[in-house]
Length: 103
Image (cartoon, rainbow, N blue to C red; front, side, top):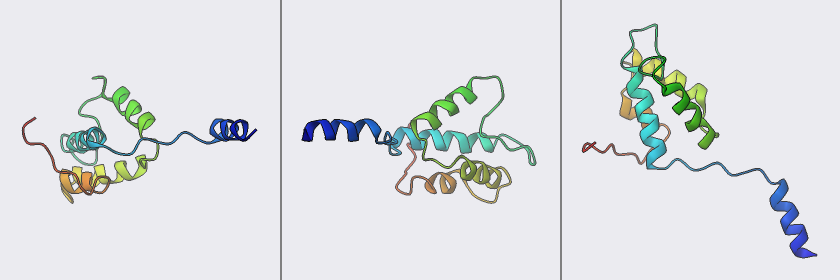
């Protein structure tokens, strides 16, 4: 009986979102780097539309649903306008993040 209750609890509990790992932080850094390629007021988290990046961003949000997309968009505008750096914006989500300069 206790195993049936445990199984039921696992079935009805929501799936846990993946924590931001190095790969997720690289994705966020890439999004903020894309923000630097636009001229304000046009600020977007993709380098260019139609290049498949939007699909990758959708996959990112599927993997990390707890990441606040509105916060990323707001920081993108800050990066785009030169009010903050890509690294500072990335560290809002990944405080421990150190970019790999070998890639």
